[in-house]
Length: 77
Image (tube, rainbow, N blue to C red; front, side):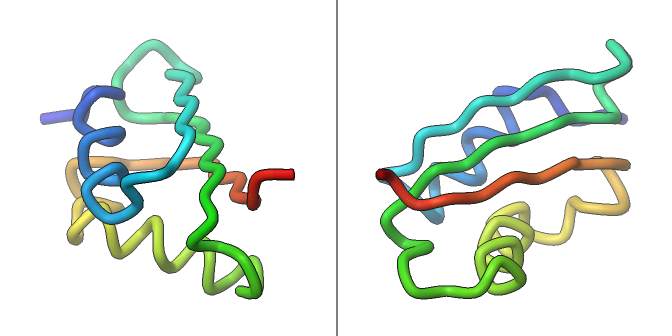
């Protein structure tokens, strides 16, 4: 069973309540997404640490229920 964009957003927002989140379904199959997350929580963190925060927010669904996620993270300007 694939994840919906709304489910992904709900998980991320649970961990990063201030986040601005934009999700695109790349293949229309609910399995391949591009996600841009902007949050103050990323301030001072390396890109790897930022991505780890998002992957941790997905609570183990990455690689299972969610097959592919092209991720961009940044802080607000």
